[in-house]
Image (cartoon, rainbow, N blue to C red):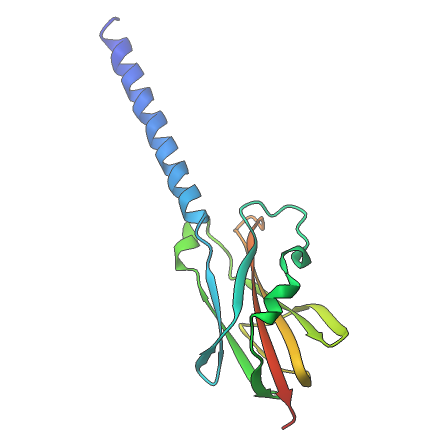
Length: 164
């Protein structure tokens, strides 16, 4: 009995260490936040990119993460009405939680008018506004296989939109 107890205790200890190690790897991977790039005519355009939430996304209001000062950091990008913008996500490292394909949605701010929560069908959108300074916020929303939110990343861009 004396020789069996230390062996069983040692095996249980190794099992505990293994379980802790796997959990630490999952947490470390979730701390990496994907980057989101926007492309017009196959050229990446300057944006401001920040997480709205990552890992702790309960009762999140996406507007809390947007700062008015951020817009001043961007120069308006000249585009034409109807031009297509492609969203490219660098997220290959978060597959440990079996994420579903991210959902993309937009907020568009044109002067004093704004439209919020426009869900996109795929990873692109057309510029449907006009004006010298139109701000688009692209939200990339991640959920895992159980439909639990992993995180939201916001990418902001400023356009100077002209007619066709």
